[in-house]
Amino acid sequence: PPEGPGPPAAGDGSSAASLQRQRGDAMLTVLHAAARSEDVAVVRQAVESLGHRAICARGAAEALAQFDALRPQLVIVDTDIDGAGGLDLLRKIRTSGHSPWVPALVTAPASAAHAELAAAQDAGADDCLVKPLEAATLALRLRGLQRFAAVHSSLQGIVDNVLEAIITIDA
Image (cartoon, rainbow, N blue to C red; front, side):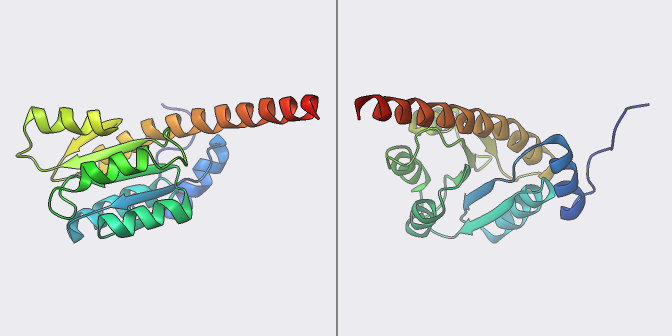
């Protein structure tokens, strides 16, 4: 039999948060730029089941404003947002200056051609999923991207300490 607690029940945010604290994982703020309400529901459920905070934006302008204001640790961008503006949004996030290292997951319609998914990666996507989204698959991808976010946070702390030391030496 497996050791330790099993995975949290779907929709049981308190169990997920408890498991997350036991493992030492930090809660992430996840920004989701979505085109369809169905996608919002699936993403919110997956994000919250992992003990994270889901922020949903219904347009590229709103998403960029939320990104600037909240500085999320993970971004999910629907390629269909504002027509086909999801990749433009992702490019703006990547060049915003806040952090080019924020993990980004792009969701695309099942009809998306290989070239469209490659364009998403060229725009800065770390991973791609085709719709319709399934909560279990999305949760697995989010767990992987959570590791990227943790590594980034650790590296940012090291860089900050080095810069502080350099400034102290120069002073």
